Image 1 (cartoon, rainbow, N blue to C red):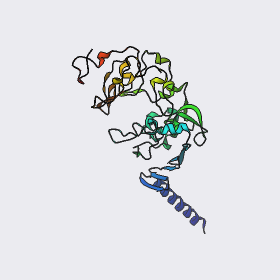
Image 2 (image 1 turned 90 degrees about the vertical axis):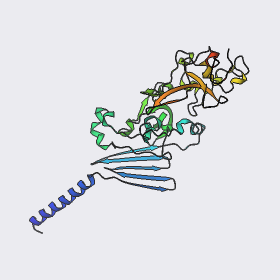
Image 3 (image 1 turned 180 degrees about the vertical axis):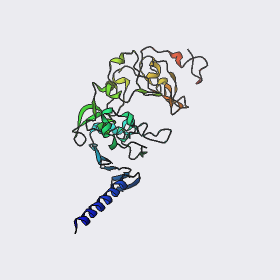
Image 4 (image 1 turned 180 degrees about the horizontal axis):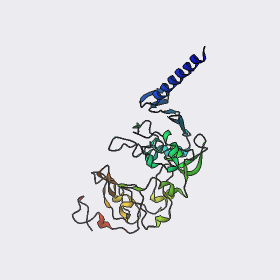
Length: 322
């Protein structure tokens, strides 16, 4: 082959290679889902992104140009008492869909590993060089079956992350850090600081816990709440506060402790339409532009009570007045 023809061949090869690369960079979306004996593989090409879930292990690979980022999260399948307690908790069943029909808006707290960044402005400036590898754009709607909720690794350090052992060390997995670093945990000074990473007021979403000026201000969340089941009982400390003691009468068996002992001035009434059911403190919040009134566990408590809070003249429930 002559040198001239050899050069022509090289030019042709270069052009073909360029066309392949350009073609691969065009925006196109192809999604396929395959489920085989507990293994689900979802592939979305828009640059490209591949997510694979296999027996508790989730791997997300994102390719943009020549940069590839891979994230793998391993969840524990142990049947320890702590995990069993968690399985019956609200943290294990935190699936929620917004008024717009999406799951991403609430995911930072309800399912951090399902959160999908949509805006580069949420990232630190130092991350600009890596943003091309992060799948910004329209987030997918996650089904209830695939929702990861608030798993063990959100509050307990996996060392080393992401494929190491789950430890008892408490820290918060920052879902923003998850997308660009393996240093995903933020240190917390105590359990209450950890809880407040999500249980805080955000605009009209009032998820913060107000302890007021009660003696409970010196308590950690986990002094009252089991850290895994999240259950709490006033009588674990106030053992004498039973229906056999003064003012804790049988007719109040369905009245929550905080309904009488609330110090924040919340409305008290039946939860639902039946006066024979649970009575609690009630609160109105705005969700998606809609006012929603419902049961709210007051944490701002006092020893003193006022019977006229419910037993007032002309009350709508026909209760006796004092």
